[in-house]
Length: 245
Ligand code: ATP
Image (tube, rainbow, N blue to C red; front, side, top):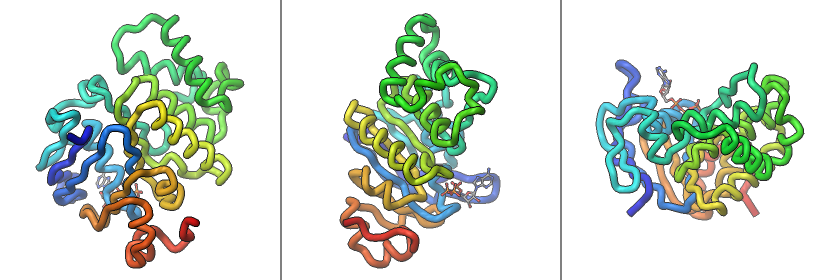
C-alpha cells in the first residue's frame, strides 16, 4: 500500500479548476518529484495534500486513511510536513527560534530543552546554518533561509515531507547542497514529495517523477524513462537542461 495516494483529485480556485482529476501515489521511502511548467498545478497539489486547500472532488489517502476532509493541523499531526515555496520564515526571530517553531507548533506541548536538543540535531544536518543559530533569519542568504525552512519542516518529525521549489532563486552551488540534503533526509527514513522547476536536479535525486500539464497528468516514470522520452524532454523538462550522463 502506498504511503500517499491521490485518487482523481479535483481542486478549484473559485471558478478556475486547477487540478482535473489527478491520480498519483508515493511509496514509503521514495523521493518522488512533481514536474511541469508554471501554472501546471504542482503547488496546488501540495496545498491540497497538506489541507490548505479543500478538494472539490476525489480522495487523498495517507497510510491507508482518507485525509481529504482533515484540516492542516490534523494532517501535520498524522506526519505530513509542508515546506512552502518562498520559505515563509519569521524574519524577526532567530534561526534557532524559527527551527524550534516547527516542533512546537506541530507536536503540541514539548519542553524547551527537548526543542533545543532537536534543533541542535538539525544543525548537524545543516552545518552551514549552525554559525547563524542566533542571527535573525532575515539576515541569512536565500540558501541559508531555505535550509532553515527545511529544518523547521523536519522538526515535525514527518513521515512525508512536501518540498515546494527548494531550489528557487538559489545559486547553483547552493542548489547542489540543498539536493544533497534531500538525499540525506531520505536515507534517514523520511519519504519526500518534491515540486521542482529544476527538472535535472530533481530527477537526479528522485526514484520516480510525475509530469503535470495544466492540471492533468502528462506522464510518469523513473528518471531514466522520462529522460528517454524526447517529447517529454522537449515539452516538460525544459530547453535549459541537458541530458544527465
Ligand atoms: P508555479 O511553478 O508557477 O507555482 P504550479 O505548477 O505550482 O506553478 P499552481 O501554483 O498550482 O501551479 O497553479 C495552478 C493553476 O491554479 C494556475 O492556473 C494558477 O493560475 C491557478 N492558481 C494558483 N493559485 C491560485 C489562487 N490563489 N487563485 C486563483 N487561481 C490560482
